[in-house]
Length: 165
Image 1 (spheres, rainbow, N blue to C red):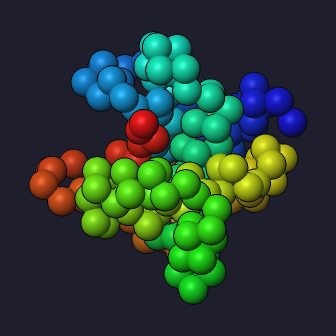
Image 2: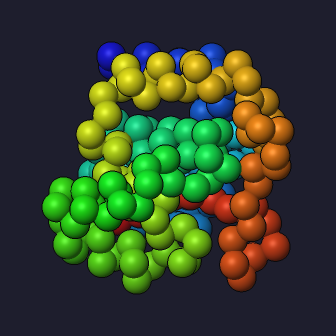
């Protein structure tokens, strides 16, 4: 499935997808972000071009953050007993260390999981999960009706999950 079709599927599932915004201009090393409160994926087009970041990987990564919110309230999809060895064996050590140093503690595991799964899951699988969860999720409510907005430590607003280099 082409990335463009995945983006259309994301829109059909209730996510908003848009290009560069003020966040992208303030975070010049970021390829994209997921806004849980608005169910919105922002692709930082200028940053992607300037940094030569793979658009398809960023799209899959941000959509995985959306799935983390829809299915688990922003928590990991995989149990830590499964996730930790996968990260250890499949993600480059430099990338893992960068996430551990740059991201707030509350976001580290979900960021690593999104990076890992964005490389493992094909677009068709992500699209199927988006469609399966889109009909039961609207706004910021999860499948169980709980609020999906996650406060990031040190801020007053909802979390932004972003893929940075």
